[in-house]
Every structure is written in structure tokens, then in C-alpha cells.
Length: 117
Image (cartoon, rainbow, N blue to C red; front, side, top):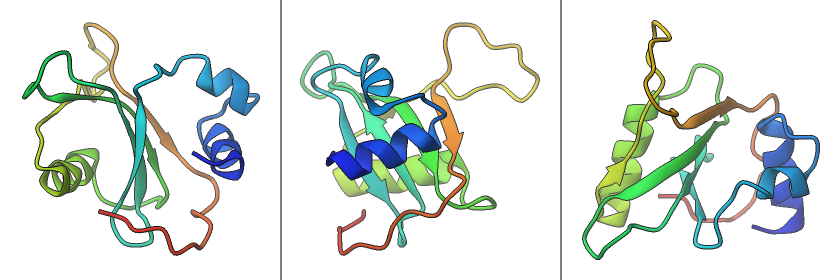
């Protein structure tokens, strides 16, 4: 992402800086804008093998009462023509393992002409 996009994502994710945010990223990670507006940004990792699902690393919602993570990921999966692997947080807090990071941005996504899926 561009420097301004990284700054926006760092603020949305509660990171102290873009550098701190990117410290946990892997080199192959990619960001995707999902929905009109867009409604969210999703960070995907690289699949371990050809044809394997792409791991979902992070979701940033841009709408407070927007679509569920499942709906957003379904749209992204369909647009990419690939399965996604995601561990969503449980509602009762009984998670085993590490669920995907989900953030709700305090500000809307800046207007741009970037295409979304």
C-alpha cells in the first residue's frame, strides 16, 4: 500500500505507527478492498501450496454497521476465484488458536478511484 494508505490502516488498527503495523506482516501479504465504497480492506497471506486456500490475516471494516466478516470474505473469495482460510473470533471468547485481527475504522475510507471487488 501507499504511505497514506499505510497510515490510514495503522490508525484504523490501533497501531502506534505504520512501521509497528508492518512489523507483523509477511512479505507476500496483500491488501484487498472489498465492496463499494469500499466496505472493508482485507489482508491476505500466500497459500502454502498451489490451490490451497489463502489465509486471511486481518480485516478492517469501514462501516460501523456494515456487512459481516463472513459476507465480506465471501465476496472477496468469489472475486478472486480462490478459497480463503480464516479463523474468526468466537462470540463467547472461547477461541483456540489466534483468530484473525478485525478492526473497525473510526473514519471512513478516503474517497478514491481505486477499484474494489
